[in-house]
Image 1 (cartoon, rainbow, N blue to C red):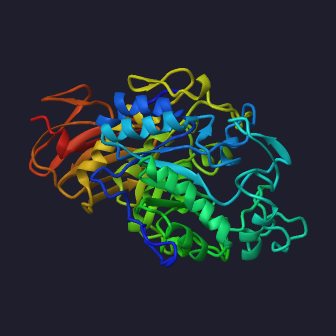
Image 2 (image 1 turned 120 degrees about the horizontal axis):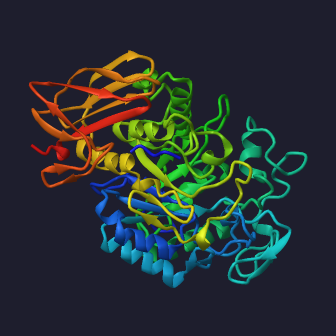
Length: 472
């Protein structure tokens, strides 16, 4: 692979709108998919703390069913003890402290909709269970059974809101989140995470929690601290449950952005990306945008690191330079398309070196182009898109106010031209290919003179310059 470079009293249960976008000056989230807590802590110290990243998002922390070699057992909770395959309570607490000490917040992927699909099994901490009976946590009456309405108790028809929210998703025991005990138990788990210092949650399968707003809003109102929330709500054309129904609770992951980016780069028509966001999408202020996540990189619903023609990297350059949503960058591991279930390598201990990963870890957050664009994103802030140029469907270039400028060439031949820019005159490091050290750049440079510059973008490549990368 070539890499080119909420706080309210429980009695009131008032709707508490969580903060829109992370409230720090650094907003980018890195999803550390299946990294152990110890390895996340190490990476916060080695790299993330100085990278411009605002938050890490870690995989579910609770004890889960031991699936013996698959990643998705993390999404089948057995108990709410912090004792899963990623580490124990001590390692989790140390990770939070270490990341905080390095200026990085921690978001936890929280599974609040369901428990396991297995009829029986054992958790990573040794606790045993049968489906619907999780000793000390839940009993049979805490799940949906007859309320569902579908013939087999499963979600079969996404056009039926009752099925989606009361039936079992892929056989996973569906929690009765409309009941007082379940609500209080879920809030107890989250408040335990809060006691250890977490800053936010990704609410897995939020679309499947009963009655949008009512249940989730009730649960979040019991949290002892306002958290950044982002919710997994996958859009489906014509479906009665939509992402916009959840914006009163927190941010929503906008899968339509992911689909649009995949379509544009796969079809060779990136010129269409100046229309983002499309009508009906979650507004930028409430959207969590991403090129790929742990599900979509495996199921074909996004680009991934195996995509041809450098499309994956180029898509990240777009996503981190175009003003839509709070971006999440996936940092994951190598997998075979014929085995998308495989658990993380190296015992889950994420390992990076230089501008990439080792031991079959990808460490996308360290790739030169992506890490450079993290700094670009932080530098340009909310500046408007200016000087948009698209002289072919495979060519786009644009500025962000007077603070940055990018260009992307998705064609198989070089693209040479002059570009108008609002950046001040001077010499800038191309942060897609190099890093700045004082007044020097490890890669190519671009010189702006009197509101213009000329450059050549080779095939399937890009450039990026910003005010913070001006070296003379």
